[in-house]
Image (tube, rainbow, N blue to C red; front, side, top):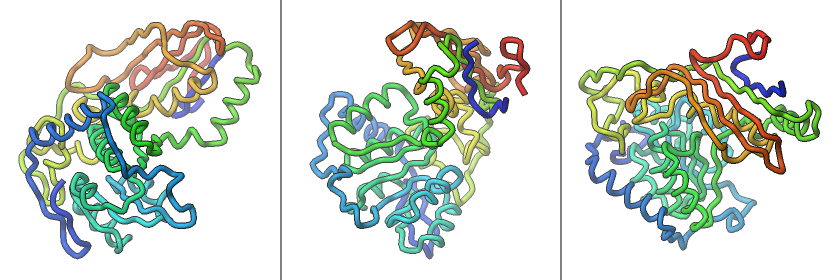
Length: 340
């Protein structure tokens, strides 16, 4: 079995124009946190008011959507491709090289380095696609919701559970349409497996094993190395995270290894692969969770995890255990069967 597949077992700065590189700016971290904290605080008390909410029913189905994309390279590039048939009004990225390439491809789109500025200025948007590092998901999503905009946000939806709850409340209050980027959920393979399990093809499921060989972990923090390259607005990239000097490698991908920005392998891949058994078996909240891995760190994510979730019996499933494995804890053998 391919370890990259799940297994189920029953045994920013001023806006730039396309012709110019975007300007750099210095972000006051205290102000950023005040803005973000105020936003999340409003949501947590269910007082968000969005009189201009553009729910799907209010949008003319015969015209393209007016969209903005925040984070347009790497995973963001796939999301841009997914909505390129719509009217891309604005593109936002902290990396001027990515922004320049996006502007050349979509010359009618206005370019921004700072999504806060973009969301203030672009008043004709229907929705926003968010493809930033995890620590920007909640601030960007909440700001879009406050503008009454529909939101598609990459997984994981937020950096913390509290943020997810606040956004859920805010979206409900605003009446906007939201979606998290778990593309595999819509695939025919997942749907077919769900159908088979719910039809009892393999009987009552009492044990579930889910694993991925990928490893977004670390054993120490990376070393800051002074000034960022001219194309990267480091202050905007850090956003609400603690201020540190430029650290090579965090941008564009290794941020996933560190808790200030990401959530490791489980945070990156769990929502994809655990989705299948949760969906097929109607799982909800586990009654207990036991994790095995290296000593926990407040700074970096584990190089591997084995996590056992126990679920009490409900009217949808029998009592069962679900075990997650990742990184250097991915199994070589399960219940006497070798894992390729």
